[in-house]
Every structure is written in C-alpha cells, then in structure tokens.
Image (cartoon, rainbow, N blue to C red; front, side):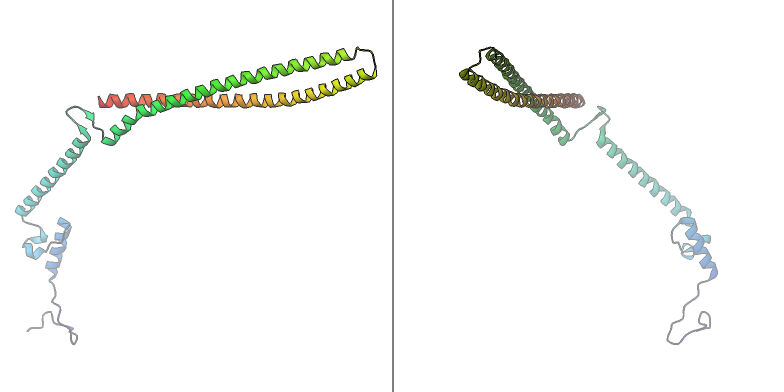
Length: 224
C-alpha cells in the first residue's frame, strides 16, 4: 500500500481515509440547497443538486400532500356545518339539556306558588296579631276607666282595700299588656321580614323562569 492517507498512524489504530476537499464542499452545498443531507458525489452532480427528474417528482409529491391536507380540512368543516341546509347540528347532550327546560320551568312555577301561599298565611297571621293588639288596648282603656271611677267613691276601709286590689290588678294587667304588646310587635316585625324574603324569592324565581323560557324558545328555533 502507498503512503496516501496513512500519515501519523498511532500503534493499534486503523488509518482514517481522507475525504477530498472538493467532495466535502459539494456535500455542504447539497445540504444548503435542499435542506437535507445529500452526498454530492453519489448524485454525480456539481454542488450536490438532484437531477431535474427527481426534483420534478418531489414537487409532484408536495402537491399531492397539500391536496390531501385541504381535503381533510374540508371534511372537518363539513362535520361542523351542513352546507346544504346551512344549520348547525346539535349533539344528543344538547337535545337532552333542552328537554329538561320545561321540567325546570314547572318546578319553579310550583315553588313560586308555594311562596305565594306562605305570604298569604303570614299576612293572615299578621291580621290576627293586630286584632289581639287592638283588644289589649281596649282592655287597658277599661282598666283606666275603672281606676278613675274608684277614686270618686267615699273613703272607707273596705273601699280602700278594693281600690288597692284594683290598682294591683291594673298594674298586673298593664304589665301583661306591655309584655304582650312587645311580643306582638316583634312577631309583626318577623312576619314582615318573612313576607319580604318570600317576595324576593318570587321575584328571583320569575327572573329564572323568564330566562329558561327564552333559552327554550331559542333552542326550539335552532332545532326547527
């Protein structure tokens, strides 16, 4: 064998053949031109360029891939909208949700009617409480009248005792009336709060009912 490619050998190592500079340059130009690793010497062309027949074949392959990609995109668009009727198609889940709306509206109507009945009952209780309060005021007026009448009688021991008993009874009745009046007022305030709360719930329920009706009408319009 000759000396070419065999200089600077180390013991126990095989020689590494040198690649000609022209081949290395041609290979680099081939990589830059095509963007892939192309051996200039294997192609047999200067600068690593492919023959025109192979470049034409690659161009046709790229066109086919682009055509297939466009076809896939068109199929995906057809799945979203039908060009024949121009209307979106809803899934089974959408249709199931739409079918639940009338049931929800009926339930809200029932709750609203129940709140209205509760308000009616509370208003009746308020009227009863006010009647009791009025009777207590009448009793207090009668006690004052009895007290005024007893003071006009002639003083004697039995009358004084009766007057004292009358005063104690009047005080006891007044205390009972005051306690009952406070409880009545608290009861009326509580009833008014309950009425206000139920009225707010009815108002909120009405808003939800109207929203569900609008959603149902819109869903029916889309399905039709």
